[in-house]
Amino acid sequence: MNSIAAGVAVVLLTLGYLSNTPLVFYSGLFGLAAALAGLSFRRSRRGDAGAVLLLNTLVFLLLGLAIVDAVGAVLRARAESRTIEPVYSFADAEADPSGFERWWKLANTRFLSRRGDLLIDDPSGRNPFLLKPGARVQNHEAVLRVNALGFRGPEISLDKGDRFRIVAVGESTTFGLILLADDRPWPEILQDLITSELSCDKEVEVVNAGIPGFTLANNVLRLQTEIFPLRPDLVVSYHGYNGFHFFLDEIPEVQVRQAPIPPERPSWLLERIETAVRVAAFRKRYETHDDRDEPALLDDFRTSPYSTHYRKLIAMARARNIDLALSNFNLAIDEDSPEEVVRFYERVFPNARSDLFANRLHTLLVRELASEADITFVDATPGLDGEYERYFADLVHFNQAGRERLARNILAGIRGILEADPRTNCRPRRVSPVR
Image (cartoon, rainbow, N blue to C red; front, side, top):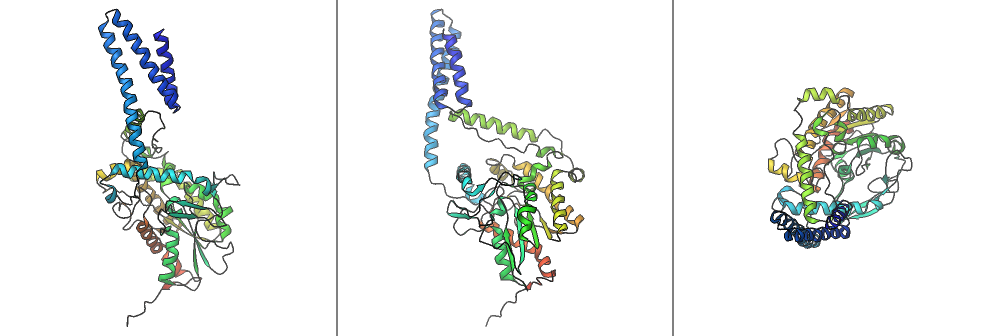
């Protein structure tokens, strides 16, 4: 009878764990402990000392798990109730890596909880979602604003009039997941830099067409229906991280693109053990592939999905006589980053080493495609890529200083277009002499 009860308890324990149902899980746990205690009593009457020792050990382990989980639940509740200050650099967070991890997860959870206020289903069905026109979403101290046309930022007219219009397309790093009240996305900063540093025959307007979670493929699908109706004179592409998986067929190290997500489990201790095992297996897969030199990889990813999407962007812009500038991407780490820094970011981004490798190859790809198509390549990395101490909130997203640096790098890359285009005829503003 005790054996049957133990079997039922194991089923409840397993189902409760996998379905994250604490009542079922702990009913199974205590039921199994009781059944094993009963078996131990029966074995003791038979004088089977070895079996009794084993069964009692299992009972104590089960009861110990319940106690550890209870303590862990209290610690978790305290940690979640504690005020977590925003951490914007490795230097700030280095003293408390676990605090950075808690903060990042909290920030991500808060944003995801407001996705329904920010996004709507794409009516055309081309993409899974679009920005919700007129949305106003509180993100920590900042407000994420979407205009009536469904673009990030202030209201604009569909008719650009006599303006020279730049449209910035990209991911969350272009959209600007700002956190503080005075923070601004880099396209808005770029607008101010152009106005303050250049004197142009036409007003230059910058439109932020970035969307969180989008890839280059998603944005290419938006060109005909959303981007081109704005009649842009110049499109600036700042893509990278979200599309690194487009290399997966050619680059073994990037095949492991889906980082393990901590599962929701009823047991505090077992959840941590399971997550640790998953992360260890995830990292181990990096080491199972032989290194290949970059020239060989470049030959391969010329035909990769990432290359295909970039070629579509180039062809579609060229067909409409729209100038195009392709930018590379920035990460908080680079090849010279200390090992402890890489491990620090792996707490939140377990695939950081793979992303580092993919980012290097992405730069090679974008630079070559720009040269091949005779279009502008924007090097967005000077003084920014790998600068984990000053410019990054996490592996890919910037703090405000980082966004300002990126805007300056973008302006340096497109300045030649603005100065050479007869419609704008931009030139440096003269600085008034100090009297």
